Length: 338
Length: 288
Image (cartoon, rainbow over all chains, first blue to last red; front, side, top):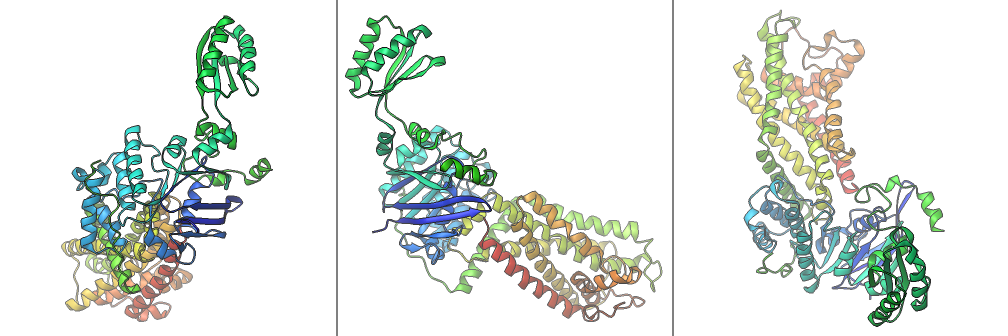
């Protein structure tokens, strides 16, 4: 049975640029899918197609059991969208913004009013409710934007980089709200550049790059794919690199990677903390002075780098969002793909 | 965040409305939003009023003494009366640039995306905006009429006729707002919308009968001026205010709109609304 969000073979080109190059997605009801990828990878374009804002060139999509292309207005009744910008009217108060959105979701004026009060309270905006949102902080605006997306408690939610630009405290607060939403049965598709965020919130992760899904699975599965745990050692003096390398080679399951300028050695291992103790003893026995040593498990950052060849935050396009997709030359992309 | 109210409320069934009812209701919700904005940015209304008032004062006192209307001599009062319909029409026309800039700003800020993701009537965002602009234009026009009366403008027809004149002016202004809306949806930045929204207004308002009779123009421009929808409305307002000058013929080229300015204004306005509303709504639906 297809999930609450289901997409098959979505293709969208802008001029020469293939923003989406055959995206398939399936998000089971009540779960969170994290769409991960560098700027310009196609994350926002995917969200825009699924929220009826953009017609794909080909492919099909079903959201909340409704065909996105054939029943767009019915889809709009069943979704909430919180985009990259806090899309609220800055001259209206928080309350007026929520009431307007409620009425445009076809609620009665009275119901929209009551729901606005509820949401303002829930998002800690009651004190600021009657101030124009121009006076709000970035975090408050994001909260209001999310509240606007939740006016009708839609069964399916889309959040496009919901925490970009937020400070850690506000990010934490938004995470709590998102977790509560999902606990209540909402299906969520979330795009993010923060791997930690995907790790924290998403059941499943899809890594997209160049308009294609290049990997999918749970956070653990993706990490496993990248490789298991590693021992990482930083020695004190450059001439200690060689002896340390031979020690690590004895314990490792693979090649020892050396970063000479930082005097850092890394080797994949199996054996956990017990092995780490043995490595320390052995290095000590050889008189190697250690600045830092640890057992590292792969982070989603490692996954990301190994999959895309570059880190998430220093992605392809320089600007935020997909607005700069046109700045990429699609031909060079294709060549690197082959 | 407090934990008092649930994030997830019981989903209330959304009422189904007839397409027209929903369209009217949604348009009014959006119009209300734009009117609230207006009251929060009073300087916008203020500047919107000051500019045409300046025109009235400048044209009356600076040009008034020098521009001779054939058949009326160089009397200031004759030009004043001739001029006012032109300034009124120019005012309602220039107000359209605001619609374009406002819509471009909404696109820029992601608000249009939000609206487009809501189950609302497709044309409502634009209709609401143009209706709100109509209210603002009406306020500006009222202030302007008072200033015009102060500097000596007089009407010579009954009140019904004068009010019909103002109604036609507003109708033309409303029609032009749809052109502004289309421009706003077609440009990349609010700044471009402001300049793009103004640029076409200069030839439109100057190649017309608004400030000088068309007699003095080259023949080719006389045709352009007399078929200009803007001229039709100026002529209609002039006629309905009783501000026509006996020595100035209705038409130089014999253009039909000049002979029947009231009908011409109605036809032009409806035509512009139908064409540009269709184009603007189509553009809105595919906006990205």
